[in-house]
Length: 256
Image (cartoon, rainbow, N blue to C red; front, side, top):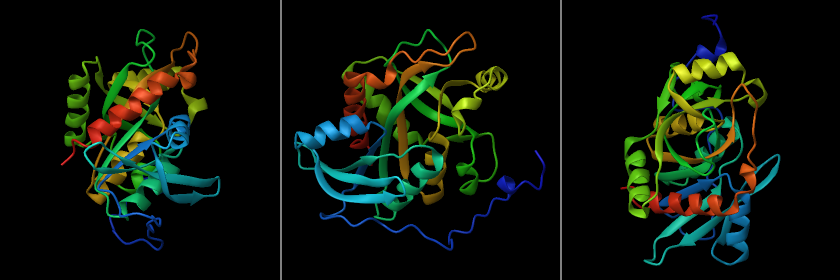
């Protein structure tokens, strides 16, 4: 890459011309936050009254509702949608951090780079290869960004206590789902990546820049291999998606 490329011009200045503004909540700000990419899970929990609407974030694609989830022991968790793609996900996270929240857990789905990985198998992300753009505005240029070790440990503990099998792994984080080429996939395998998705590098970078704890767990979805892409109907796996949400809730409450 040309050394003069703008993406390499990292600026660590904490103040920007436009700073994130916290959304207005109708309740006291919870200490914990779970972000999910599963709009269907949020809708069902809201319809059944399990989630209480308390505010919203906004973008050009519409409102992003925020909810409060109360646990049996009286703890409050802010719940919302994580957006789609690194720029939107990073922006939404920035606004929630501006509320003063310091403990975040994210759950979503991913493509797998190995066809033998079963649909629904949880992968706790230990880091991400930065094949995208947003993270470079938060951290100096490098190949990878690591997840917060405390968040990884919390997710592992939640999985162990539930008696479920899981994997630890690195993600290939990319902005371009239609440019996942054979050669690029092979390079990411050599980097040690086991899954591919679009947001983790940005989320991990924002978390490190702002000094907060954030982890992410994803479930194995479509198969991204040279022989043939296979969607495996991964977006319609309702039970798996619900399970992943509650796993993230469990892990989030374990953060100090």
